[in-house]
Length: 114
Length: 109
Image (cartoon, rainbow over all chains, first blue to last red; front, side, top):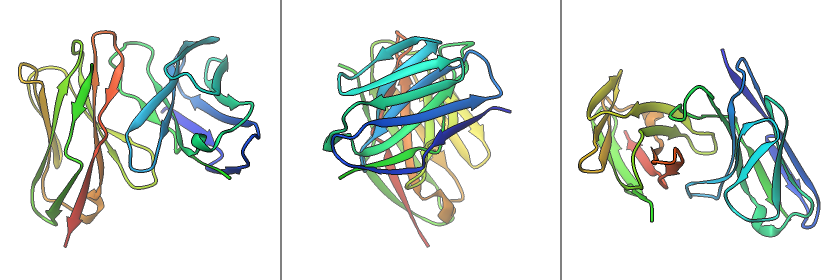
């Protein structure tokens, strides 16, 4: 069966520090991968998605970036965090066999910027 | 623009039935998902509708009317563990997933 791992679960970072969140998927090949952010009590905001290695689409201009160095690895990064980057970050995967496949989420990373 | 509307919050009683509505205005339609999200946790997939009608899965059922741009999630025999937010999401004509803000369901004993 497929599993998705996302870490760390919780992160506290100072303003201006760098960020690296990692997500890996097991049990599937060529998945579509997604990074979302969810502010407290709000809906999901799509940040990036990827349909293959090295292919990244950005939905929202900001100081975050994403990379997909391997088929089942998706990384969210920032060179300098802002206070507004605080939130719940979720990685998700969906089967690459069709564009109407459900997305399955990792446990999320709760990021607090001080 | 693209829009999905859900009630912000609903309250129901343990053992009862509750219906959570979702209306959407999107550029095209290629399917609709319902997800459950407990507080502080990630969303989990509940159901998928692409054709009109009712899809039943245990205590949960999901209905779709494409002509009305409308769906609902029906939860029967409510349990305290059903207290969560329920998210509606629609796949548009470009196969982009449009998310609703979610409905927070509070179950009272």
